[in-house]
Amino acid sequence: MHADSAGTGNYHLGAPPDRRTQEAALRRGYDLSALRARQVESVDFTRFDLLLAMDESNLADLRARAPEAVQKRLKLFLEFAPEAGRIDVPDPYHGTARDFDLVVDLVERGARGLIRELAR
Image (tube, rainbow, N blue to C red; front, top):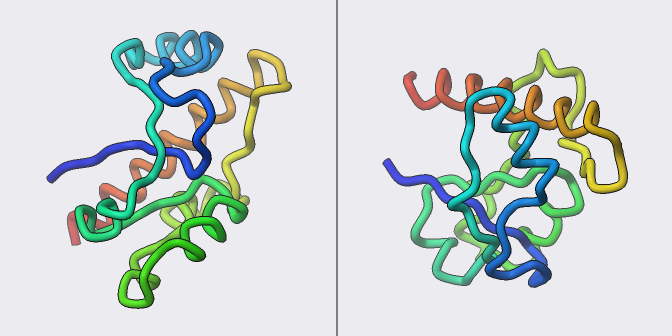
């Protein structure tokens, strides 16, 4: 199994995650320092069995770029965490440390739900 992360936009290409993201993740034991931003590529639609978007805007971007045959493999990440009570992972960029911690909470919930689904 292989997982990767990519953005729908081309800003921050090659840059590490935001310092505040790294700090929030590190408080939970996740070291993101080796990650570098990349943009979704056409080959990603065939390389991966599932493409997850963090919010509806990014999902719409993926849907606009994806071939018809791939559309059913595009989902919102938090579809795997209905207990989160929301469908979008918010962008904490203009927020506080608490907002970055919330994102880590939501990503952990989504990841646990995704793992449960893949185990079926």
